[in-house]
Length: 537
Image (cartoon, rainbow, N blue to C red):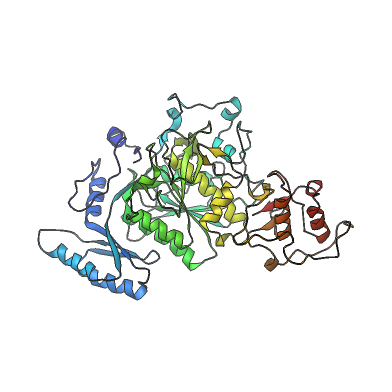
């Protein structure tokens, strides 16, 4: 699994090569560097996660909780994922544990019982001296122009090819910058007082977890959150960030606590189906080949609840399908691309990877800096938040963005994208910069979608005070985005015409409102003669 980086110097040599280990009853404990690690291992050994049938509602969950509470120290209900975590200490070789197993077996709604496991952050390499280039040399910028780009990842995601042009902004294509979107960072917590967060970030520890606060005592979570939405460091600079602490200062945690965090995010979406919610998780553990592990199931059920989940592929240089939750098909799994548009040697790959994104020598928030400094890290942990940020841009600028599915978001961020490292690069060159938006779900509309407003075809007499097409006449995913960031809806016909006339991605649709004469001009292939303006998906 990931090579674990720690800020404890005396333990660094041991932890640098420690694998993530699942600890089941009777299994040997992993090496520990502290009392905190020993306590985690003990808790994991005594904890099981019950996967309940989807038919098990609130009353069913309460009944099972009541039944097990008499035998177990802790029973924690995860109602939105329909799972329970139970901690039942085995104090002797008596029949007490067997009685617990009998109680569980007597509940027909329990689909599976899975031992808890230790999960770690997909730890970064401190990239000030990172060896992460194809020839094994210290990674360097291929050109002087790239060297001048402090945030090269932001520069890369908004253009089709190298060399970098020095433009690190996504506002031209996504003027909303993620406003109205909440990204949950499931990690080591966040240092929310860092100036990069501008008061848009909160952090917490969930009730029932082993943490008392969401403070980041490792630095990994703050770095990830900074790439999602930092003032200078972030992809989506107006997004709201909510950090949930599930990993300790060593970067270790339990799959049961991670499932609890996924449940909390799913609950936000279930309470408000219109909410624009993204989950970013740069962590993982060994995957069960059949998907029978806690984090994979939790990710799947959170996705089914409508959460857009983005996860890191892992840093073994191996198969991402061997990592949970990266193996889950319903999440967006991200590989690490370096500054030469190649997959970093340490990055996992394979059929479970959906996209690549910049993850090498990424400059972001230093959560342990008392002065609010920045730091470079490398790894898929750094690539995943770039993708979470692009997803936030897409949801924020989309009409009814809260209704978009993971598949639709993935389609939009890869439409017209270059191939980097053998995978489509997560691309922020869409939105208002796309001449041909990706097709909306469902049957494609014909060349003339619905009755055309206005008079019969003829020469356009110039600007007219026509009204925009009513929302029900438009595909829900499209709308106008003006330079002042005021949304206006897009006539469906324009989408079709752009596709029919084969306009390149750089083509622009006409500004301000869509008038019937203007639409007819578009149909005649005169799109290029109009002034540029933004069309968001």
